[in-house]
Length: 230
Image 1 (tube, rainbow, N blue to C red):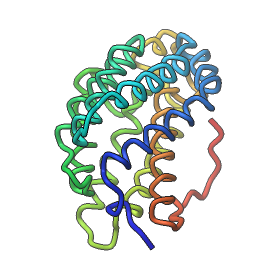
Image 2: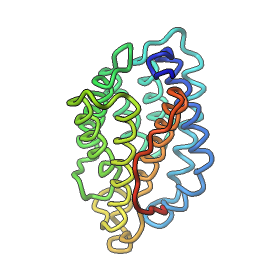
Image 3: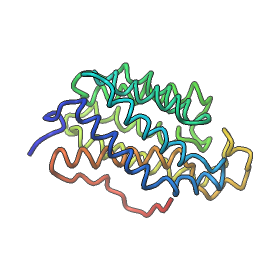
Image 4: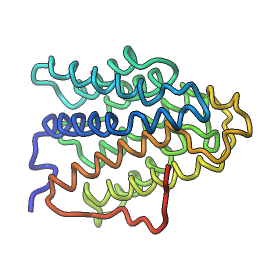
């Protein structure tokens, strides 16, 4: 049985980006459909364009560190994704990348999540309950921080907890009235539809967990006990 630490960190990040790019390509129309109900109907297309551009950008790097690799993704999303989503996703990745160590330890990933959360909060001027990606980022950050306080959870177990938190955060947005961004203009019509940014964030974290499962060679279910059809 192997572990994520057996793979070079940047090689692992490259695999993660490729797999995320493929999932977003597969889910592009679905994310755009979700956005059409409460936004500009362009989130899926914009995120897909950003991911594909990021794949090209990191390919040009020579022996990058994890920080440089992730920061390059952020810079590319900032440049290639339209609207506030590109600014928030991109800038948050750039800031949070400074927290990553060379081994991508659970501690550094938890610090990354915290820095990402803080930047999303500052840039988006949001709080929990505003029906945004922040409703996913906050519980994920808490789950990862909790994982650093116990020796029972390795990278795979920590990832599973984060995915479960992300899924419940995305579900939580369905019943909310949007208070920030374009979705806020739809007022009560936004209730009953999940936030596309929250769903997209959950999808990304799900892919990361799947890649870690493949690296380790075992399955660690997030433990869902209910249905969520976004």
